Length: 326
View 1 (cartoon, rainbow, N blue to C red):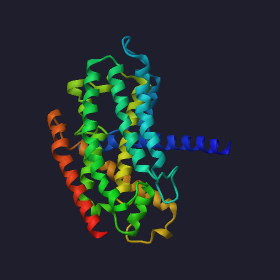
View 2: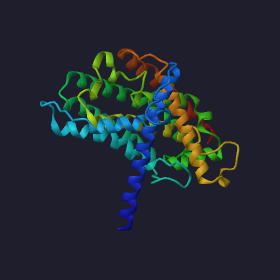
View 3: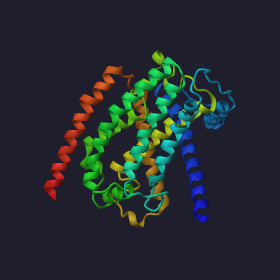
View 4: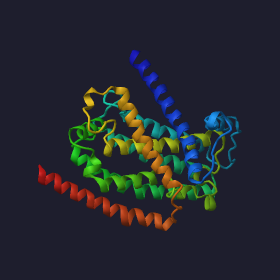
């Protein structure tokens, strides 16, 4: 009974933390875009517009849910739930400090990547279940894009697993305390993972599934109200997962450089981890408001002809170096 109670409390706390971070990210995105476009951004609802995102969520909750009569009812309703649940479940194995985390799995990295790949099902369901040409084309684009960038993303990070000799996220960070951050050993892997992770999260300039000028709103064209909010929060939760992975795998996780981390309190480790994560999120937002959207053929060609060969070169070189040193 106690285990069940602790499990329920853990799920509630995790959901609250992710939802809060998603709301913060939406506000942050608006402020970053305003800053880059010489605007003020949200400044009406609450001090400095802090409650603008909350007001938007309330608005979406109060909106009427309208469904196409010809849509597949079951798939249509399941798609937005899976879009949020998959990145939510991935956080179960994401440690934010040496002693803070819900579960440390020996195959934690495999678990996270498997859940990240399952998001594609929600997108396909949304496109197919909506009975809309725009939604279906957007879903097909997204499926092709995620398959194309999933391969170089996983290949790019295999070098880190070779060096660390483990798939546990906590052990990978511990290895960086004993040596140095893996970005020093894997600069190419870091760049490839950052680019592929941005594409996996459907962030600009890789947001072809949601190209407004071509597909209205892509695979969630037919979604309104709370269902649209689930897709919206799921996108930011996926971006948060990607940035957490980048920090854990390449940037030392919660470790503070040049000091003895064993004497640092856990709350400082949590603060350091979140600062690193939000810096990576800011970088992704910078990409969105700096680079134009890529063309479909350029997007696919870039993934298969540029990223994947570079990822294989990085993997072979890393494997050779590890073999020689051992």
